[in-house]
Length: 220
Image (cartoon, rainbow, N blue to C red; front, side, top):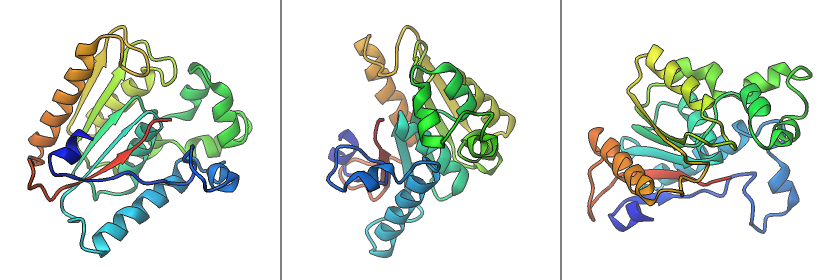
């Protein structure tokens, strides 16, 4: 990763629900009904371990995630104020919007255990939007204007909430881009440039001698 080459300590945790690993089906399916809260606890456990071992400075933590990692980033900044800055991309904040507008509605049905009208409390409990009043972290948001996996409506909701709460934030919507921001190569370069500027704005400037820690959460 680019930040690792510049001297950052980057944690990429294998939280419950991660795919492509050899931990068995139970590990993969252990997030059913709690697809944000359970992996969220795993991630924070990993952060705690780094701090306990003296590897990470608890006062210099950033979090970054894209796609499902974006969902987790959005969720985690409602659960803790330990992160100094957040970078999130193509992540959702509200499960009914997700179920009703994305191209994989059965994923919400599967991971939450039913339709919105059957289990409304669970749809709310596992959604960042209903807990955003707890957020204190300056947050940078990236999305594609034509994303059908995580529709841009999520990011309008997220941005409006952060603005209402006076939380420092920035929303960038790349026109004609889908979920992966890969149609126009310049958009990928702009994404990296603007995310680095956001880190620098909030005191995360490091080349080779950095002691900051970035918690990086993967794609879906």
